[in-house]
Amino acid sequence: MKTTIATLKKMKEEGNKITMLTCYDYSTAKLMDNAGVEVLLIGDSLGNTMLGYADTLPVTMEDMIHHTAAVSRGAKNALVIADMPFMSYQPSVYDAVVNAGRLIKEGHASVVKLEGGAKVCDRIEAIVRADIPVCAHIGLTPQSINAFGGFKVQGKSEEAARQLIEDAKKVEAAGASMVVLEGIPAKLASIITKSVTIPTIGIGAGADCDGQVLVYQDMLGMFDDYVPKFVKHFANVGEVMTKAFEDYKKEVKEGTFPAAEHTYKIADEVIEKLY
Picture 1 (cartoon, helix red, strand yellow):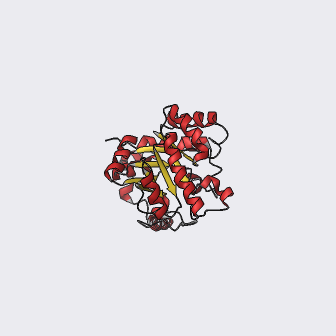
Picture 2: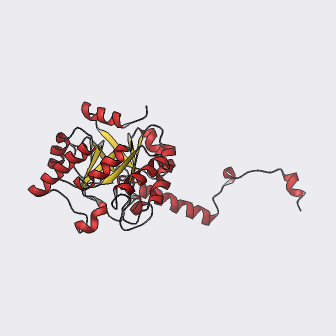
Picture 3: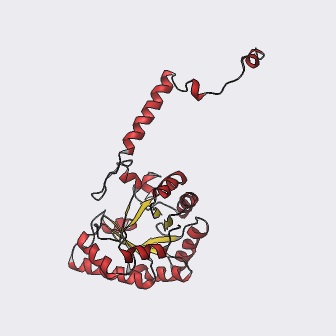
């Protein structure tokens, strides 16, 4: 059964946790889809994990459309959500709606995600009026790294905590169908989750959120440029891949690969006629 926004809302109501992972390509999307992960997020984190940037800010709409379309072709059951990259929605409401539409029309996403609370509610409202579902994102918002002065936990003071609760309520009122809570204290995330009727998806926000998301290269031990506190390695795939690459290099150098079973045959009499 295809996962939809309605599916996720019902999961929240029934206390059934939601699983989300980032995804950036067709083959990985197929694996995650077959594993039953409900939501695939084409995050602008691809700037770090796929393109090698120091942060997400250089990621373009073309980057996002390219990767979203690839994931969409591999996801038969999972809900596909695409990030709106930096400056694709900040300049104006018009830009927000047009670029959200491109992610749906060209990238074949089902939902778009944008960062910010009360200050982007006019964008959320306009996008929703265009019949495009929106996932909000509050707390530690990576596109605001320069304003934050780095990747810092948000909502630790009373004022900041109250603001995040209000932000969650306001994005819901603006029409957001779900909200990502990133880098905030677990107890605060629990309060927010109980304060809204839309699903909350945590990343570094504790276990009381309605669901969880991780960058898949992080949880598989494939990306070690930096490892946030909230990351758990569910497998050391990076080590397995490195060993496979090393073994491949060794066998090619030694001449043991390809072996006879990896080659195609031709009749000897055909070869003899070539000399």
